[in-house]
Image (cartoon, rainbow over all chains, first blue to last red; front, side, top):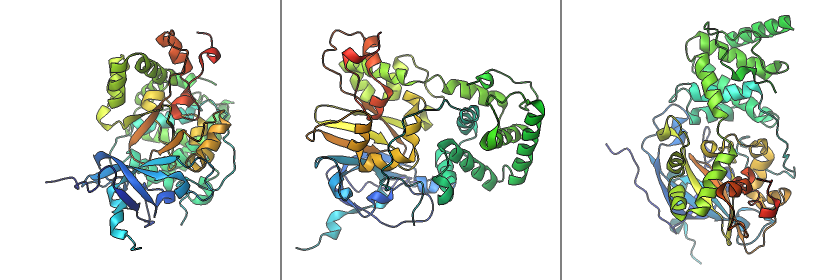
Length: 105
Length: 103
Length: 224
């Protein structure tokens, strides 16, 4: 049985973080929810902590990505430099491909 | 809904208090206990985090780190039926009496 | 601080005796903890010996262990590659005792600082820390203020620790939200070419491995 979900993203892909606010355990902080970032790396696939926290098996394993955000885009009145970045580890089921949400100019 | 543990970017101008307190005995032992308890459903890292995250917002902000860990652990132990709150209360009262008697 | 509890004080009956307190007074949380510990031992969920042994072992890892590994990486490029690709294996190579359950131990990733990028590590959701390499985290790392501000105002936080960087340097914050832990490899300061590994290790502070500061300059290091 395949205990892992296939990875959908690779380095350079632009993604948007879902903004779902589920009840219960989740490892996607509010400050990135709804924001747009760039995938930097696929860490591999891991058991889903949102299931593990309730005694579930955490299967199927979910791909975990390192995603980069521009700090000036994340924070209103960001007090640092324009080139500052934030990197964060996010599970695939929280990510949507950005090109699906392209708004025609 | 604001989850009190989801702390990134919360409004605060508070400077970082760089003082450190030597670990209290019970804090060290709690850290050890967390590693000793059988992993898996009962006390994995994820389960332990969920216990801490269930602390109500008004308490979370005023509790110290190890106090949250302890409350988180107690919550998980009671939820899993390993211990009851009543027996913990009773044992705590006994230990308190014994300690006072030894002073 | 009393280290009474660190000794093997197992009377064999599984019950902590009244003198084994170690703190000046029990306090609400201390008492609560001891009640839970006593009950778990009574019910056979764990033993006093296991807790004592684990507590004693916890104390053995300190930031100097991480510093020694980074100093080794600074002087030995091949070790550095092995350290970056698998810090736990590199730790084992240097003779450090590895965790009993390496498979379940969170993987550690090394974030290397250079002229263009400076890293800062935080866990906004709870306080995850590379304890396997560095031991226990400082209180401030676990504080709500650090968890809130490190992501939003990293340069402000670093300034409080005495570090100001030019705008041309990218400050890159890493939020450890999953089961990977992060350690920063600070830049090797200039003027350290003739220093021994042990002297170099003295420059690598715990704070520099979190990223709130850089490694010490050679003329500011404590006397070796």
